[in-house]
Picture 1 (cartoon, rainbow, N blue to C red):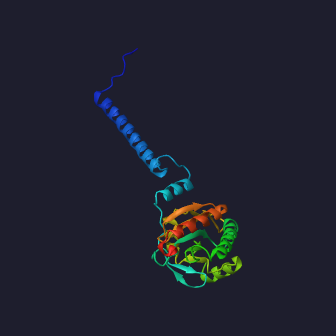
Picture 2: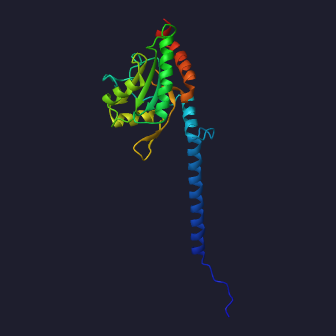
Length: 235
């Protein structure tokens, strides 16, 4: 019986060793890319949730509303945040769609309370022009001005304090949502799952704060403080 060990040729052995080294380098490179990506996404591994990341971006001043054309429920066309002089000093913005049976209804109730507060406070501090409630529908294909008008009547929206509008096109809606880090996902039943936060924006469209819907008193107070920093509000 031949018990001599099989001969391993030097070229074949060198090729195998080189292949293993290349595989190891590729694995290390992929791991490095993954670590760098996670570090960026989590702001140095400090935040792990999407809303946590948005809060970190707000603190860093990284999010700003894309100036887009908005069609209001009264038929007018607006372009907020494209002209800082014409925009309100502080806007409390919520993203909704009129067919929404859940979070949008809750946001509507909270905005009604803020509207009453603004009406009560209009004689003191910043004027109603300086703090504006804004509900923006992202469902540009369904929520035309006529539909918005019906929704505004149902929600008892007072246009002196509260604006309901929709971006002029689906692309405008998508651009605005992306610019503020808002996620909207079809729910498979004809509706959407989306962020329910109240967004505090300054006159240039910079996102200055994020609040849960039940934090509307804090959001309104922050908007009042932000409005007071605008030169026109202190004259």
